[in-house]
Image 1 (cartoon, rainbow, N blue to C red):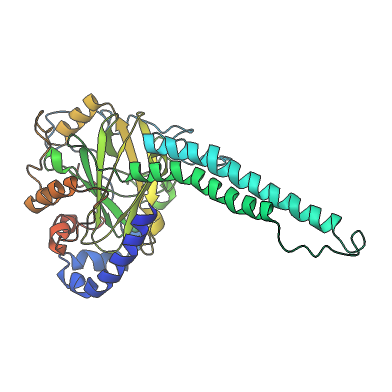
Image 2 (image 1 turned 135 degrees about the vertical axis):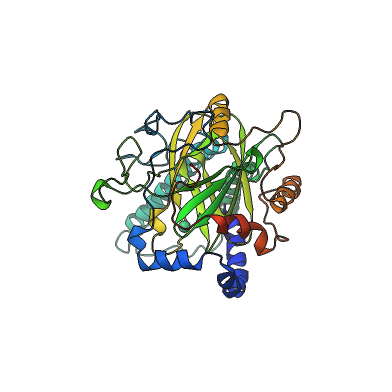
Length: 378
Ligand SMILES: [Cu+2]
């Protein structure tokens, strides 16, 4: 994660040079201007589910188009009084959670208490009245060896699990992974499933009842917590490696879901990649985690993790299709450029910054999403 942050800084510097060109190339200036003029009206009303290609019903929605899965109070979202990290539902997240709880916090506590005790001891035992003639000792071989070796051993003890975790986070997804492409926009997320046909989703934050006009959809507790509930949920299978690819249309965003131990910058003109496996079905919430403008706080992420069978039905309900078994998932109907990029990315180690991608490659699909027009995917 730290390395990704560094990469982002470098990329941001490069992007600053290219930004004016990008602004001119924007294919939706009218929509942008509209949004800027009336930011409060940005997320369009979510129409009741109108499945146009509805050969298969969306298995995540009921007959009235309402989401079937309601959020858990104890997993996938912030909790009142929770001290520490959210419960983790990915292997990397569990390891990181363990590392934090059983290595880092105990070490920090022990070292802090040890130093505090030394300080108190020195202050009391060696104060002027108790120790009028101070020792003039300036060297002590044994203690010097101890205070050199002890920190070295502590650092090694931290480094081993730390580097193991870092390597696990940078491990590329296997060939059978499900690819989710998350595109940051000011200020909403759009999504594509390049291995599953032409599925495109747009997710806007659900507003409160008092904030919407009569008849518009508003948030209920069945959707999720305030500021975290989205009108469209990202549906992903459990137990299957997910290849997350991020990019952005306008400025740098960051796709982050705490329960997955995932935070990946979304940079215009670039693809970032990481992978994870969701171990438990459920509803998980996250937010954009890179300051991206006035409505940065209002572009939530809602992920619904379902069984692979339900995922396949959901893909069918969206008019997509599952990649044929045996063959590595290849992008079939998504933009050809993207397909080649992902293939080459998969062969490299680590989350890949695609240095060869011209802005047009990643911006092409992103700019097709009408800014703020929610639910185009439905
Ligand atoms: Cu953002």
